[in-house]
Image (cartoon, rainbow, N blue to C red; front, top):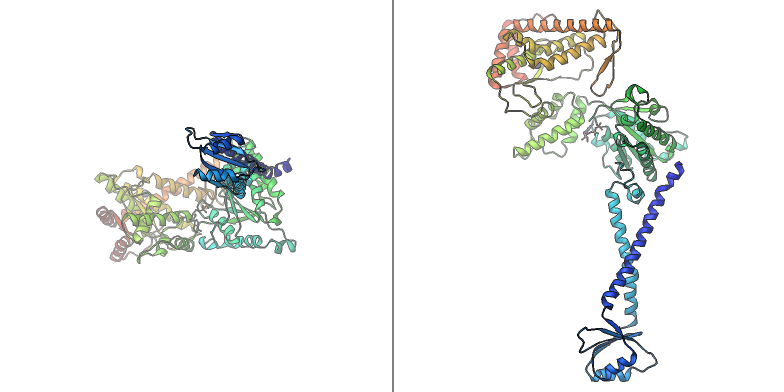
Amino acid sequence: MPDNNRNRQPKKSNKILWILLGVVLIITLLGNQMYEIILGAKEKEVSYDTFLDDVSEDRIKDVRITDGFITYHLREDEEDYMYYTTRISELNLQPTIDELHKNGVEFKAIPPEDESSSFLLSWIVMPILLYAFFYFVLRMVMKKSGGGGFGSIGSIGKSKAKVYMEKETGVTFRDVAGQDEAKESLVEIIDFLHNPKKYTAIGAKLPKGALLVGSPGTGKTLLAKAVAGEAHVPFFSISGSDFVEMFVGVGASRVRDLFQEAAKVAPAIIFIDEIDAIGRSRDSRFGGNDEREQTLNQLLAEIDGFDSSKGVVILAATNRPEILDKALLRAGRFDRRIIVDRPNLEGRYQTLLVHTRNIRLAEDVDLRKLAQATAGAVGADLANLVNEAALRAVRMGRQTVNQQDLLTSFETVIAGTEKKGTVLTDIEKRIVAYHEVGHALVAALRKHSQPVSKITIVPHTSGALGYTMQMPEEEKYLNSKEELLIQLQTLLGGRAAEQSVFGIQTSGAANDIQKATELARRMVTQLGMSDRIGLMALSTQRDEYLDGQSYMDCAQTTAAKADEEVQAILSGCYEAAKKLLVEKRALLDEIALHLLQKETITGDELMAYVNADAHCLNAGEGEKV
Ligand code: ADP
Ligand code: ZN
């Protein structure tokens, strides 16, 4: 069976060429026929003696003499027939010509080559030109419809696989910022694609595929393209979800087509994005699906079937490696896992450098500062940010992008565009101001806490009425329990301010509470930071690279106990934040008033207030958590 399929495509393409030839022949025949019909509509054959009569009676207007024929028109002939007669070569034409000359008739001979050249033109040159014309038109149509030339003509209408092929991606490692570890692991693959013999000579088998694992937008596709670009090999890409079709069997045939195409032009890279769409585990926990299983089986068969010494390397990307079928990860398949992390400070800086390469920047632009402010952003966010900034600069009618453009577009990207239209009542504005300063003040006063880069009460389209932008000065991978507790206090500081100043609780704190609860729950159920629960993991995380959802994995009574513990931590932090704000009420009022007037204050301004206050009171004693 598989062998049958393997031959199918070349046969099909030959057939198409034959059909093309047939069409051209028919057109040529018809065309020449038409030509003759059009011209011949007014032809009339006459006998030789009629011709001689016409000559002697001086009825002739003009005459053409060729080797085979004599054709002529009459002077008085409304229909203007072209009369012709076969020339009799034994008869001497001289007297006739003399007579024609005497009568002043225009006559000329047509040389024999002329005839054969017109034959050549209409029966050979024209068809060849026609054939070439159709051939190119057809090829262009084929290319447009997504295949690589005639090889894929057979796939028109049969499977609309969105295989996307680039001969040269033009992307190199220079275009991928950071991700040094990932690049290092890929260097070997590039070397292999360059020179497979070096590896096969020694008997080494290179992995057939590597799995790129990381959050969306971290540059997995970009890396795969860079591998193809560095190795100067064609790049085939398809998304896992394209394989999953309504009809059973279509996905499998697409997999087959994809591998055939790649094998034809090997060495090549096949990139399968979102491989989890087909490769998810076949056990029933995630729901079974016949079509997907068939597709996956075909994929496994193809991976096992192809000869890696030919130089086809498969790269696949996913952000949910944990749901992939074990069979895919087995040795000899995607046994290499390359982690594509969210970029750290340096990585973000490098990414900004890459994306501002072709942007005209103003003098005041400080990309390092921007990198610092964008903790948590992935490459795609940063690319987006730079573009937004450039658009903003154009909107403002400037020639260069300045720091303000970059910072504003960062806010657009993370918080939605500033929504100037939303009007808050005065009391609402006051509550929002106190809420935001509450967050900021708690953060600033607790020693370990990160400084705030900006507080604003300008509403954003994302729904936040105001926000406090925290700015980590350095990357942190480890957090102590104390630091996490301070984070909780900061998160709850908004509500604590509302409550202590106005004695009310507003809906504005919903998001804070949500975040605080998640963090507290993680401390209890995963980080072993609760004395009552101890060092026991109660929940397991899945989707590590997506939103980090987790599910509880313990007895119901333990879960209830964990809930109580989460509650206790949260209310403890809330009380601590409230106590702090009550103590610092004067400072809180001062800053909130300032914020109400200016709508936006910077972290530096905030710290100026805080430091002035600390100076005044000389209050060195640290707060107990
Ligand atoms: P993924 O496949 O991981 O979802 P992509 O590779 O499609 O992410 O990245 C989307 C875009 O983000 C890229 O086209 C590129 O402009 C930008 N990008 C992502 N990561 C990087 C990086 N490390 N360096 C430079 N640009 C990046
Ligand atoms: Zn808040």
